[in-house]
Image 1 (cartoon, helix red, strand yellow):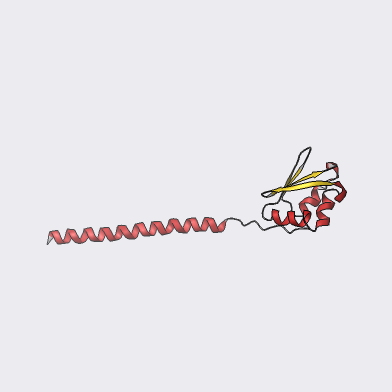
Image 2: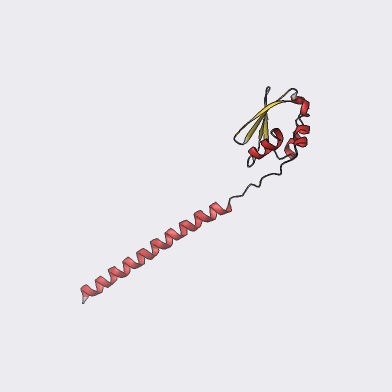
Length: 121
């Protein structure tokens, strides 16, 4: 009888352990899902018109050429002093890097769409 009682306790301990481990795994999965779903989603900024971009870049006559690399649009201009930084930001560019021979526009979510609208329209 004592052996049967010990056997019952072992089975109960095993069941409780399995339930505890299952709850722990479920809790970890819930925490991970909450972190993934609670990340701030960056909304795409609106795409301005071709004329608005060129106006911000100092006019179409100031433009030489451009290329796209991932989320960046590299623009070569004749006169970088004509750049209107505020209008560039208003046009949906999230950031820019100005170097002596090029202007790099950072467009996070929709760089390809912006590039096509400005330079291939």
